[in-house]
Length: 108
Image (cartoon, rainbow, N blue to C red):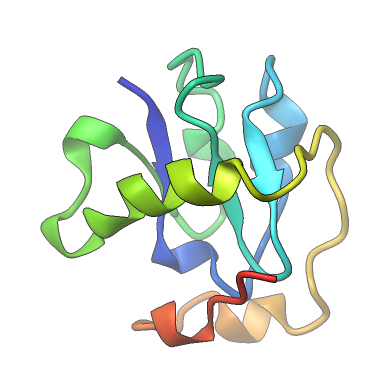
């Protein structure tokens, strides 16, 4: 099992989860974080740290978020690892409760 970052993180990119991760499994894109399933040690410490509830165990993903399992694995290979907490985007709080944000995902 690995953990998966889902749609709620898009345009929020709070990095509280990164700060508590004991391994380097988080990777950072322009407006989203992903978890490398090969690096994740399934420790669960990141889940309660996410202020927008964007992180799920892969076996508990809501059906409408299932495609994020493959997306995390794909983007983790392309994006650099992030190991320390950073300030969120200036408009992160405005996006925290927005639904259906997939179209805003920036891959580069």
